[in-house]
Image (cartoon, rainbow, N blue to C red; front, side, top):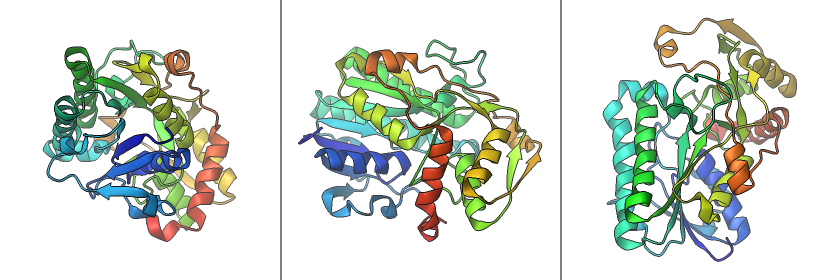
Amino acid sequence: MNGKRVMITGGLGFIGSNLAHRLVEMGAIVSIIDNLHPNGGGSLHNIDGIRDRVTIGRRNPTLGQACPNQDVVFNLAGLSSHMDSMEYPLDDAQNNVMAQIELLEGARRYNPGVKIVYASTRQVYGKPEYLHVNETHPVRPVDVNGINKWTAEEYHRLYHEVYGLRTCSLRLTNTIGPRMRIKDAKQGFIGEWIRRVLTGEPFEVWGGEQVRDFTYVDDAVEAFILAAQCDESDGQAYNLGARMPYKLIEVAGMLCDVAGQGSYVVKSFPTDRKRIDIGSYWADYSKANEDLSWNPTVELCEALRLTLDYYRCRLEHYT
C-alpha cells in the first residue's frame, strides 16, 4: 500500500480509524470521509497521533464525488445500530443504501478502475440454520439494518457484474478493540460491557447461553488490506470470524477476570430486542483463508486485555 491513494469512508469510526492508522504506517496517502452521525462511532480522538498525516472531509455534497484519483476505497460508512434501524428505518436506509449508491455511481462515472472493499455484516444471515455459517447460508435478515446492509452488499455485487467495478464485501462478526464505541450498545453489547467494567457498574447479560465469535480489530484491518490487494476477491463476499466461539456468559466472566474487576447479572431478553436477536452465531471463514490467506491471530482473552488497556487512560474521550 506504500504510495497508494486510499479513501476510507466512515474513517473516523471504530474500524475505519484503526485502518487509517495501519495504512499511514504502510505509507499510504490516506483521505477520510465521515459525516460524524450522532448514532455512529466517529470521533476525532480516534485519529490522535495521525491527524496531521490524513486528509479529512465531510460527506458534502455527495460521497461519489470523492472517488476520483483514488486507488482504493475502503467503504465503511453507514449505521450499525439494530434497534435504531427499527425506530428510524428511513435514516438507516439513507445512510446504508442511498449513500452506497452515491459512492458506486461516483466510482462508475469518475474512477472505474478503483478497488472498493465494503464493510458488510453477519447480520445479513439472520438466525442461523446451522453452525458454523458459510457464505452459502440463506440470507434472511431479522431487522431493518440487516436488510439495508444486504441491499448495499448486493449493489456492490451488481456494479461489479454489470459495470465491471472491482468490488468485494467483508461480512464482519462482533469486532472488538481500541476506538470502538463504548458509551452505549449501539455498535454492540461488548462496548457497553467494557465501559461498565471500567466505571465500576454491573453489566447485564441477556440469556447467556448463546454463542458468538469475536474478531480483534487488527485482524479485521488485515482482512480489508488483503482483500484490497487481491484480484481474486473482485465480486466476492467473505465471512470474517474467530477460531472458536464463546457463550456470552463465558465472555462476561472472562472480561471481569482480565479486568481484575467488574460484575454482571444475567437477565432475560427484553421483548423488543428478543424479536430481532439472532441467537447463536459462529462464522466459517475458510473462504477468506483460501482466497485472501487471512486468519484471525488474536484470541479473545488477549483482545479484551488490549481493549481494556486502551480505555483505562482515555475513558473520558469515549464516555
